[in-house]
Length: 313
Image (cartoon, rainbow, N blue to C red; front, top):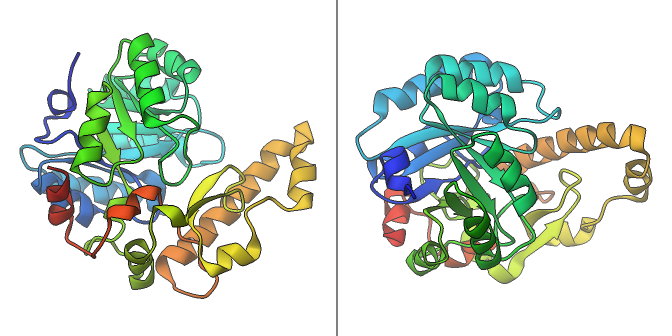
């Protein structure tokens, strides 16, 4: 089976994971120079012109041994999805990672342009579905991932997917150092998607407070909340998070039981949650909710991207 180095032409089997409002072109350019792939959520750009400019910048700075891609939310919550896909295909990127919906159209259109498509999956059922749609690889989101995580341990998920699927598996979650990376490869993954360790990078544009939180807090401080997007999401357990709690309000729970309203409630909650996340990333107040995964356990300093990559290799 192919390995990540062959598929993307990178030196090391690492994708710098797409993180909402954290990932940027500076981080990806430094990642490419260090021999890894980097990925940015398309939703980090408010306009299609900004997205197009980011792709052009990354193409200009691409070096041998590095690779870049974008993450697409492919369900109805992302009203820009089709236009974003069109821009990615027109400009040309190395790969697309799909999340939260059917990747069928993305795979079809991207493959016409020779763009690889990797799909976020949390279980075998969805993995088999995207394999049948001709995805190039699976991003196996386990229960140690930051943000929206899966339900299975890295070992359980990787081994189940590699045993039952014929396309490569890239593990997402639970990698904060070289030993953990090698552990994922030993289970059968061809590479890893690593996000949280890169939040506290000098190239990241998030607040000094967010970066310091990733240095100060550790694995034991990561908890699940439904208060951001309506689906469980990992955040740092700050005093403010403790104050507001982690469960949906009684009204949200009631509305979520109504089949006709459920979709709209989720979309509204997603929109509110994204605005709250943006405030937390870009402006420090006492009402901050910082998204991160347990791999911040190994974040001890704010470092340049190339030094963070070096810790894994």
